[in-house]
Image 1 (cartoon, rainbow, N blue to C red):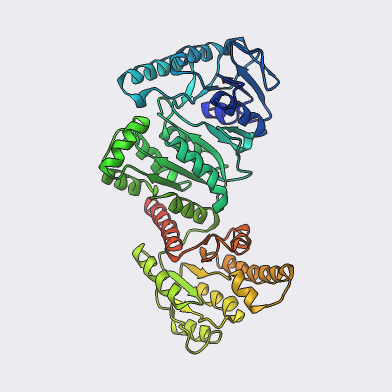
Image 2: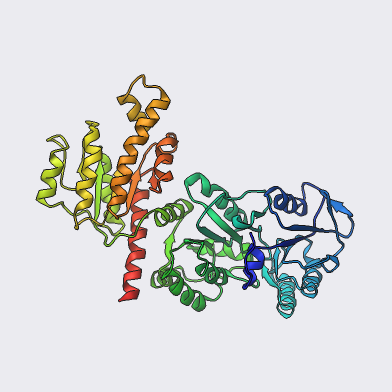
Amino acid sequence: MVKEKKHALDYILYPESIAVVGASRDPMKWGHMILASIINGGYEGKVIPINPREKEIDGLPCFSSVKEVPGSVDLAMVIVPARFVPSVIQECADKGVKGAVIITSGFGETGPEGRKVQDQIVKLAQDGGVRLIGPNCMGICSSPSKLSALMLPFLHEKGEVAFISQSGGYGMQLYIRATSVGVGISKFISSGNEADLEMVDYLEYFGNDPTVKVIAMYLEQVRHGRRFFEVAKEVSKKKPIVVIKVGTTEAGSRAASSHTGALAGSDKIYDIAFKQSGVIRTFNAEEMFDAIKAFLYCPLPQGNQLGVIANSGGICVETTDKAVENGLSTPTLPEEAQQEILKHIPDFGNPKNPVDLTASLDMGSFLNVPKVVLAGDEINGLITLGLSTSIMQAMFPGTPKETFLEIFKGLNSQLVKTWKDSGKPVLVIVPGADFEPEAAQILEDNRIPVYTTPERAAKAFAALYRYKNYLDVTKA
């Protein structure tokens, strides 16, 4: 993908040429894995292996240094021992390379001596106009460029999320896992020690990227808190920022320090700063992806008043509890709405909110009650129990799977139309989504977020409400 380059990250995420410094024939070495990933991932630009001891690698001609490469080089992937990195960065500066991703570790995270070398490469880069990602990182990915510069060739086919992680290994696992939970990540950056470019730079850049709808971050620490706070406040006005911030305990902070050289800071201060800047804080990967799905698929609620519908009294009660625990309310529906609901559910059902359809499995109640609940101004959104394939199969015994799935899709298409016509956020609980993937896939293909538990759905809805509340406050 050709992009007009105005920012250093344009050269890094949309490069027309990449030099792999430290390319190797040995399949067990990073220099081979990164090179192979770039090639096998489908990157269509120019790939240049740099290794003074080789003439060619994987059919590509090798050069002894970046300076010897004919023509321009946009991006250098640096995978050489730490002691050679300063000279490589100087060569990149001499060549006019705009961006370098330093995979190599052994810098600031190791102590004072490593910090000196890290400071040296930053000075060389700044003097030469080279912007750095890393060192001590896992690499980058950019789906628009078909660029997978990780240790394995993996790209999300599509996505509207940018994900930046201060943890390399865990961040890469989350990047790969995201597709399995319905989240597409178009750009991934393992930021490492953040010797030059840091979290706030990526936040600012993706805040101005119209192709990115949600920014996700895995944070161990923020180096320049005031600037991060000011940038986050402005970016949050345009798009959600969803963060996992670790190091909440003293032991965790010590671990972060030894990991990327992070400095410990008060978790309470982070929490306050996130709230004041509109950042949506989550506490694990599950919560992060759940919130991201809600932001990608749902309109924002106008308030915190939630409707709950299920054909299980237990799920009604648990969802209500979790909603209240997360700052939401479940107001009793007006008498007129209750009377209308009673036309579609058994007499022993509950029409008040939460609405218990009972276990009668009447499709009329599944299809008609949501219209009534969502129609009222007193309800700002809905959490509902989705149809499961196992229950539907019990209702249509002996039906061939293909026919059954068509019936299932037809019923869900009616529900999806009702939900979307309301203009309100609707989150669906499918307890068996992990072993009934058809049920979840049909809904998420229609951009309806699916969750396996009431707690997960309630937390995701609460994230929508917190973000809407922030936007309202900033406009006031």
